[in-house]
Length: 84
Image (cartoon, rainbow, N blue to C red; front, top):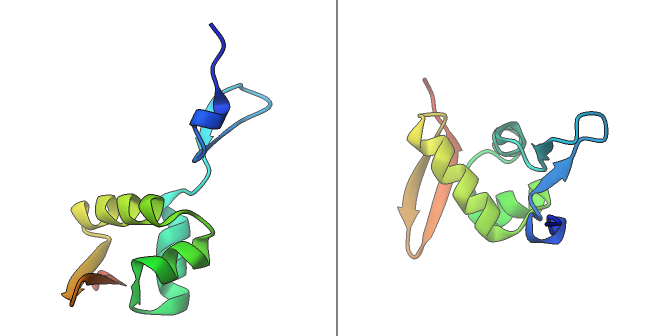
């Protein structure tokens, strides 16, 4: 059965190993926050070059491990790097 790589838009296949690698690793999001300072999900997604949903998912995961923090502002979240 063939794997449809179009169904995995956030992954790329390593040509040497055949393994999938993350198209947008966590460092892309922390680097974007270093560049932007505090920012909304849309601004971070635009900086990284990924869909909003990908940015929100990755930022939420980074928040769970304490690398970023969020603050609710109206209907949006404002993300920043953790000070720890």
